[in-house]
Length: 347
Image 1 (tube, rainbow, N blue to C red):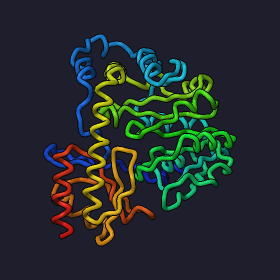
Image 2: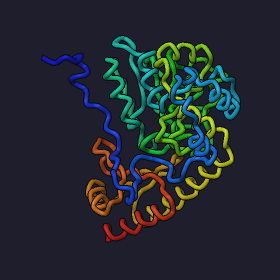
Image 3: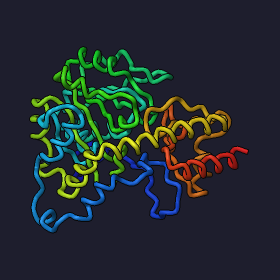
């Protein structure tokens, strides 16, 4: 007899992208920023005193909250710190969902959502996107306690307009969580919705735009009453002192952040053009990755051949995605190695 709850025994856990131990590979499978973090963040990291490690961190991360509030044009009371964006997702499922309070989201999307739903033993209402990844109209009528829209969406890179999401939030009886983990590479975001609507939660991550995937740091933007509720659910010290110090320095360095994200967006355009020249169908992406469909070859076979060349991209053997590859935008050198390899494979 198992010791775990029945739903835990049955669930298949989330499978992160492969993390090769070697460093001399072309790693384009987990949407990391190819450029280093802000020099200001690195400086803070090297200058941390032993006291930062001996003492517990600020449980609310107030210095970061102040800095993030200034960047986003809100108040510190609108911000909550998290141990990466996934921490917020876990908190949200625990706060809003149970076996009588379902979650709804359009699919295909981030594959962690159904895992968290099963762990919380809540019903999932999955509404399919159309071929262009437009916001499904049915999403507004599910009566779900929590509705999640990943925007830009993973793994498609598609973007839903802010006005559409505002209309969705206005129709919902529950909470709308806009997962903006990739918003740093889009041309708009939903920050303004928080000021107008009391049922909107925005997830932000420092993993992508700020090149800090290794420290696991994210934050929430929402109205103060929702923030207070979420804080009841979070761990007492959910963000460590090192992460707080580094993340605060990084978000204050908006000049470096802007320069880096612009480089990624420029490289994204180049990569898209190169893949299209090779015969791939590549929709416009608003993220730091592209979703590429080969018209003449099996995506799984291309994935395996790239892996043999120590070039890693992401392949999802799932309905609607099994003919596509998700490719992170790398440095110019990494992108060129990928394109060269694909020319050899497809020739």
